[in-house]
Amino acid sequence: MSRSLSRSRSPSKGSSVSSYKRKRDKERERSRSRDRHRHRKSSQKESRHKSSKHERRREEIPKAYRGSRSRSSSSSSAGRDSDKASPKKRPRRIKTPEPDPFEIRRRELIREKEIAAEVERKLAELLPKKLEEEIDLRKEKIRMDLRLEMEEQIRNENNDLARINLELREEIKQIQESSAKEITDLRQKLKELQEQTAESLHRVAEERLKLLEERRKIDEDRMALELEKRNKKKEEQQLILNKSGKSRPKLAFSFK
Image (cartoon, rainbow, N blue to C red):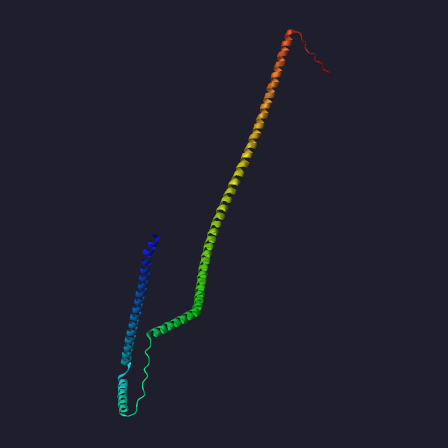
């Protein structure tokens, strides 16, 4: 069974290989036809370019020069006719081979590559210098901008400081004036209070003296009342004793 399967698969492999070869041959034919078409187009372009170039050159040539050339060509044609009539043989012309367009294109590409390499080399030589100059210019510009900005900032700060200093001076002056006024007011009030205190102390001293005098008088009156009470009491006791007869009258002795 496996052998039959392998046999059945073998022709499919061969067909795939042959189809691949056919595809590759077709692609090669297509590429060759494209190359031929490009070569034909390039040759046509070159021929058109040459013809247009010759026409432009002919238009640029002045009429007098073209007339002289026509005369010279007529003379040369007459000379050629005379040469033909002469029995001498002309030298055989050697045909120059036509230039291969692929070779021309290859040379052009090589030349373009050389020009590009030269341009790159010149740029590699010039660009660092240009970049250094540009960097130096930008650095100088940035430095100048920063310097101007710092000067402007310092100027603004100085103006702000001067304004703040002036405001502080005015405020200090106002505070000093107000404090001086308050001090004078306080001194005046203190003086008035001292005077009031002295007056009140004087009044208190006078009142104290009055109170002491009144107290002294009260004490004297009290002592007099007590003495009077004692005397009355003694007299009452004496009267009582005299009435009972127990007590004798006192003897009064007098020395002459």
